[in-house]
Length: 231
Image (cartoon, rainbow, N blue to C red):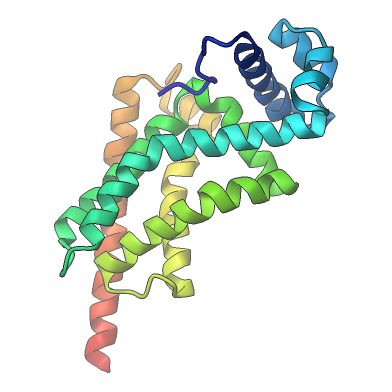
């Protein structure tokens, strides 16, 4: 996992990636109030480089959104491909589906407890609360497909229609089990007496979330079974 743009051989690409990394830090902290002067200074680039490579601050902001979409897509592509293969089996293997849900959430925990992804999370959090056109880009390319993907897994495991609003809401609540450790980062560090999220702490978080997810999946499956029997 590398939450900074990957170094490349082209000098121009290196400059663009350095500017995006700096812009993610500044936009994550200040939103569109961040200045191109501060972004260029953090990147060690001339301010004219932003105009040259991106055209404007707003276009640089959209380039950051595209970088985030590409980063998340790249990280979850193997999981999605594996899940699609299992979901296409008839009938799908419920034990494997359950494990896929756990794997997806554990992978998210690793990503969302890493210091390297903090600026990415700040950027997305700002967009969730005060959306700009950048949110629509991230939503269309990453959030909606990933959300639908996980909803399909939850629906398949519990026997609920994946396009049903209740299934979507339950899946969103399940994701909240993971997001709480990013959005409530300082709270849990202080309450648990941790200095940071080291490997041991992340494993402890994963174990807790795993048990919570099992409670949710078992409860939804049981509820679905009772509903079916009543009919």
